[in-house]
Amino acid sequence: DAKTTQPPSMDCAEGRAANLPCNHSTISGNEYVYWYRQIHSQGPQYIIHGLKNNETNEMASLIITEDRKSSTLILPHATLRDTAVYYCIVTADNYGQNFVFGPGTRLSVLP
Amino acid sequence: ETGVTQSPTHLIKTRGQQVTLRCSSQSGHNTVSWYQQALGQGPQFIFQYYREEENGRGNFPPRFSGLQFPNYSSELNVNALELDDSALYLCASSPRGNTEAFFGQGTRLTVV
Image: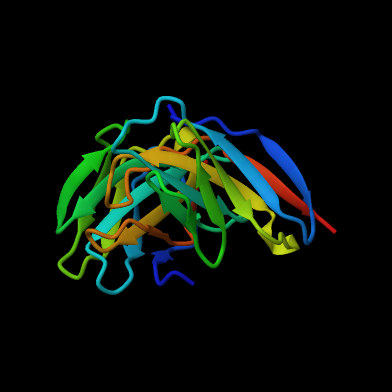
């Protein structure tokens, strides 16, 4: 079973920030938080990952709470192409494999 | 484009048959994982290969087997196909020590 809980769906207006929450209350000290997304009929695409510090890259920002029991993925300016299923994954595998995917959050970016 | 190539893209097989799916990993990536994704669900981990040896396995029966070759390309073999094996099969590769996995576009297998 997935170690994370995400809302099944969310809407966001184009150009606005999309904030996707994830609960991982049983996370262990050596487990990372990863985010992937999957656009219809394509393979999952890596977005970002972190251990305990907030992270930012060209795609998104990852905010992890101090107790590490939850996190938020932020897409700063959502576009229609960001419509996808977003997966939050917790794993101790430092090599980025052996992911346990849950059902994810279906984000719809609306014009 | 992730540089991970899977073939074929689509395949139809009959129940009881055997199937082989192929994955060409990105250059320099020596770790390959396979996932099964049923319609409407998240991907499920099947197994991982590192330097030609199985290095982790999910909750899949032995009729799911794999190989990794010296050039790090990989095969997934499924024997005695069942209707429930119908799914999108995904391959992911990464260099050892890197924490980002690159996924291919998948092979859509339909068992009739």
